[in-house]
Image 1 (cartoon, rainbow, N blue to C red):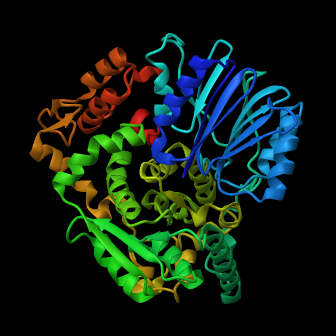
Image 2 (cartoon, rainbow, N blue to C red; image 1 turned 90 degrees about the vertical axis):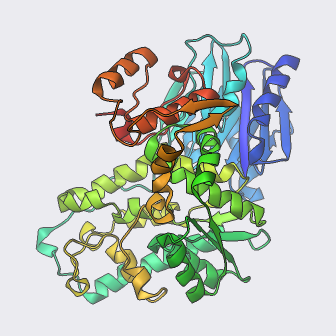
Length: 528
């Protein structure tokens, strides 16, 4: 795991102490620490984050929060980046670096901050007059709060995927995502149900080839790798490929409440693949016990995201305690292959365009859960479905092969992710391949978090007891009038009684929410 942080525009003993506090707040992401200084900056890297300083000029530095980069490419790319005098050249260089990747580069023209095109890495920043502060996690920038360095108007911002922030221009510069199609492959009604077996086999063969290559890329033989195995289609496919490609017998991990579908299905897949399978069974009290920690590390109070983050947090903690450093996940498949139920109601012409929007939005919501919940325990979670090659190919597959009517399956609706199921039908038991999709929170049992909170009626945070009002799960006492009043008073839209409760916990860790960035929240949580 890794993280970067820095202060550009000032370099003295107080600045060095502040950077130390920023890094300390992210120490869960890596124990080793590197700090570099220049005439007007001080930057730091944690864990496996890359830190490069020009041997001829100490004022030219690159920090890289990303996976390993070949030495010959590293020296050449970084040297060219810091010596460039324009953002166009910087954009070309940054596009050559594979996601996940965030960069902080002190160049001839000033500081450049960049985030990869898919948003697989994260970077937050705050600008006050001539000083720029930045860090992988928002909580690191809260170290500024107790110092007279910023004003109430200074807002922490999240760098958007596929952008560069230039300190010299104080502008956000967008760069095109080269591996996202400039046009989506739309549905052609004249082609409906006319794909030959040869055409379908070609799609399946390419899918298998690209995904296998992505899995091989994510496994490091000298580091202990675990498999997130929910028993659903996506994680099971990744586990099947990894089990074949690894020279060692890999451990697989599942998490859930006793009797949950995920545990049962994961057990079946693990037995089929021959993995060294481990289960973590949690209960109601443990969900409530870790809830404040989940909200602290996740850095949001969005209700759907918190519910899915609880089992993710418990799983990653378990995996880390078992000695794994890398975890492979099936995240991203739903966005590429139409795994969401609402898409079945859309016109087929709209599907791939909608999927491209979902992929581009991943870095704003779902990927932060993956990053924060695993990063909280020093785990490097890798996502084979989201390599540039996989994304590019998947978004060019005709939508009627993703949502496909299949009479042999006797379904009353088109089957989601049909082409993916077909491509890997020989790898897994049939009932797993054609299993109906469940959201992680449903399959693992954390969807019952609301009911658990209702029964408890209170929770303790920082030694303070927060009590719930009645009718916690529904609109209840938190109707439209109270919602609008809260929006006017706090400047934050909180949609439900449940979300209001998470917000109260959130404020214990992150006061003054209006100064925070656009928090990772599902769109319907903050827009009606």
